[in-house]
Figure 1 (cartoon, rainbow, N blue to C red):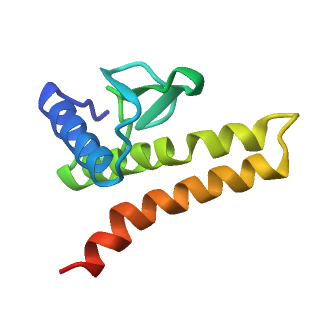
Figure 2 (figure 1 turned 180 degrees about the vertical axis):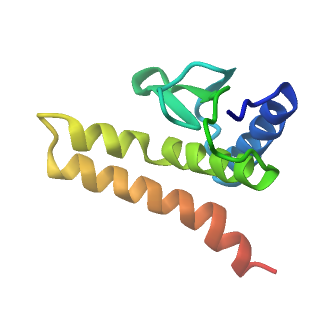
Length: 124
């Protein structure tokens, strides 16, 4: 069974911070934990949307999955992508969501992508 180490956790954390910066997700308070989180996941997040607090968990037990630097970085990117989508996911699961709320959040995500990915590449 593959187990993540403190060094793995540091790689994961630094990669999360890189993507949080790239995607401009600075309006969240982010906490990192080595261990815990959802069972049977390489990593997971827990969000308190109204407080803008995210907990990111790197699992200690990766089962039969090989732990490589690439996989740690890909997993970090995956979890940060959840931060980008967390409010939209919450709206989609709510019983009283209005179409306008989903549209508003979709446009919030699009604006984030425009400002962090599109605009910097258009201005050499």
